[in-house]
Picture 1 (cartoon, rainbow, N blue to C red):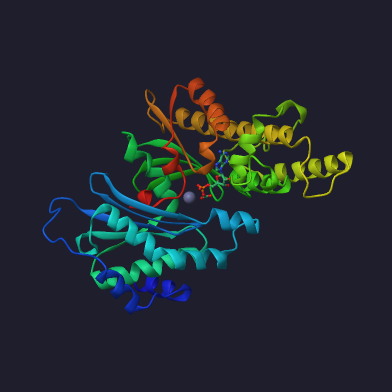
Picture 2: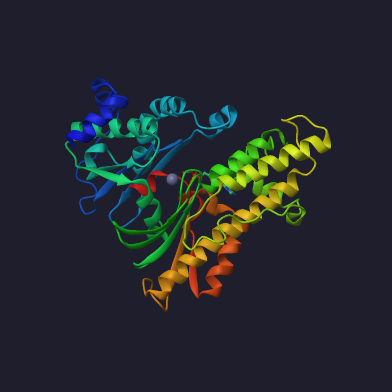
Length: 364
Ligand code: KG4
Ligand code: ZN
């Protein structure tokens, strides 16, 4: 706790008076909910300020979230000090909204759980210092949470999944394959050697200036690529899936991104347009990028399933693959994973989209 306190102080410290005012703003209902432990979860690891109250049986009592996507879309990516400032501006309101929606007063909480890693240090610091002030005032226990473990375990809120199971996390900041053997027992099977698939899709979307496309202007890069890909022909470009010869379950996306960058530059020359204008072949490029990304993710996951099955690391009769993270909402990529799980007699499970992306529920 001392180390966490020191760490939190480096980043930001909400004043004691502010926390007191915050606590006074609640009406207390002593005597209610005697039988359920209630945990407040707080998430600020990247660009979402989120909070939720969950009881010990997994019921979500209330939640709130503030997304910074709109601001970061305009600046062309996440600028950490900007993300930090937005977390500072919103954390108190979001926690208040989650508690109010739950009809729970802070004194009724059994503990506060907060993401402490991994993530952007400046963003993590806001949630951490707010939480530590809160638990100090309330004299409640603090539960430090590993963001990736929370993502991996979220499926157990919506489906009855026994350990062990395989998890694939694919988002803007994450890319890993792991065997989940218990609540805090993970075997890492593979990870991205460079950037995450969502980051690559965001970069390609930005390079294609999809924010100027009338149908895509409010979408995240990955979603814009999925949308445009439906209108394109994936066979017009032949991008090779990365790491075809690598005998492991790791991923790589930055080589593919550079190949696509070069193609876009070449097409801009051919079509005689300036950087920043939309290519006539943008939809074909989107379709090919999405296809190559799906192939790469599916092939590496296939290897991981075969590896686990060969070594009896997964249940032979009911092996489960859980896919989560923002990129997991891509239906084309899901379809590719479905082909793999059907071929290996695995069950494919995805949390609902709201729980795939960063949220307070998974932390609580
Ligand atoms: O999990 P998330 O909300 O945040 C983290 O990165 O942790 O994921 C956001 C990422 C972004 O890179 C976004 O472009 C990508 O998920 N994404 C998608 C789709 N929707 C969001 N990628 C592909 N297809 C989508 N439909
Ligand atoms: Zn995440």
